[in-house]
Image 1 (cartoon, rainbow, N blue to C red):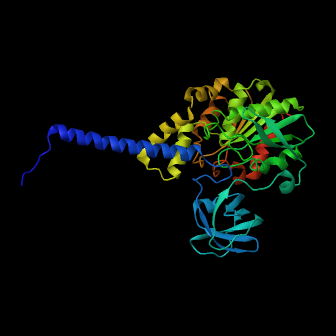
Image 2: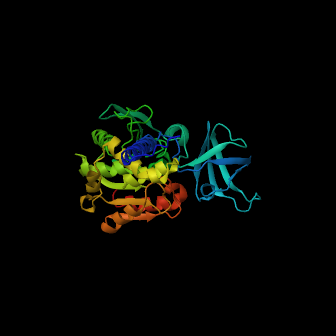
Length: 380
């Protein structure tokens, strides 16, 4: 039998084909990972949140799988398939097995919780609207946006300073309801905005979330709406990519002179790091993460230099309160620290050591509201 030995030419061709197939496969996987990061559905917990199992429920308490998530301090929503509840602090004196944690069960707001249910923690404590959830007078309004009407809640206050509240990744306009009672007690009007991609709002033309790069125009539309309807001053309060939108709007809006302050909670200041974190949370192999970032940059057509200009300390002229901490696995807080250090006196960083992305208030509601009150007092 004759043995055919590969020639250098055939060997080179085979290696090239193998490399080409591997490259194409990697590129396709990178694009899928980018889609996972850029198509985060509103109102669904981010993939960085661990799934927990309900082991038992009793009057005023719930037993969950022991994990870093279930042991974090504070008050959180707990969402499962067709259910929503609110859980408080860990109950250390209650008997439980070594692999479980018992937390205070504040209330079940929707559905039921059964043993074996799979659930996740969420920053959203409230579901519904400001009237049904909080008993606050409010009006449903439509903010004329670049792509069409943007549904919003208008919660009136006595002062002519308006707070425009902008949710971020994995959330809806229900998220800002965590702070609505605080703002209502301080007589401030709140406009809680839905932006492109949310239920009832127009879709982005390409169906992607641009992590603030285009969505900021919806915040600009909300500023215009507020001024037309009597706001003399505006404070922008944003979470996650909502904080990024607020920051960009404060620099680029034609009505930026009406913006007197920024409250930025877990701001996404490094989009590449956030895409990498979301892709990794969806089990993208480490070797493919750079491809996911490059694919996201291409799909979303980000202007990286434009974001750098926006977060350039020299461009920021508004008093700013940052809520952030080292526990944020989605938006690294190093960028927030650098911004605060560069603009000492104008930017105040309130560190929340055990806060996770978009949930700085949940980890320490009293401390958050105290810092927020001190920040707002000279602005009002």
